[in-house]
Image (cartoon, rainbow, N blue to C red; front, side):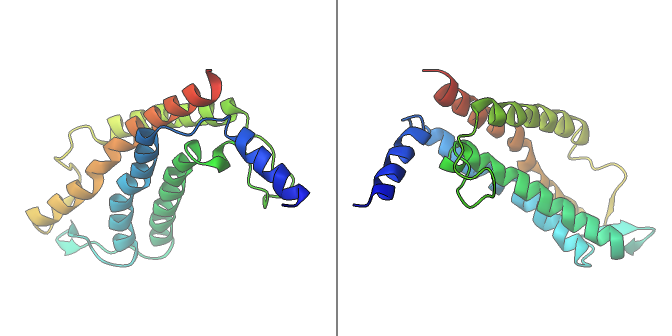
Length: 180
């Protein structure tokens, strides 16, 4: 065994503060990107030119150009943000991966993860509380039929899990990293 391997092994033991994430937290963290995926796929369908059952002035909805790009970008950003939850249960949430310039290998201060994650959970709860008021009655949208409205509801309902899942995973991270 080489000297660098011994150092890497010792660093791996200490970088996780000696405690693995609880199994339930790992499962919850993996559920977050899955909860955001259906709505993202629905939006991507819309961005790709499918009406997804939406009707505007009696004709199927069609988005193009900048509007399509922004809808697709929203889906990508949401999924990337959801994937960040995995950092709360993975080593890269405790020590910056070595391949990242300037910061690689440094320990992540627990509050640098806890504060944005907790703020994100609160913000998501506020966003969904506002966005889902009156849901599943989707006021302001006309659909080609009840099936298409059901598709939208089924695709967007899992988003309601994002905030509570992020909150409990953040709590588990805090307990593991900040409390003995």
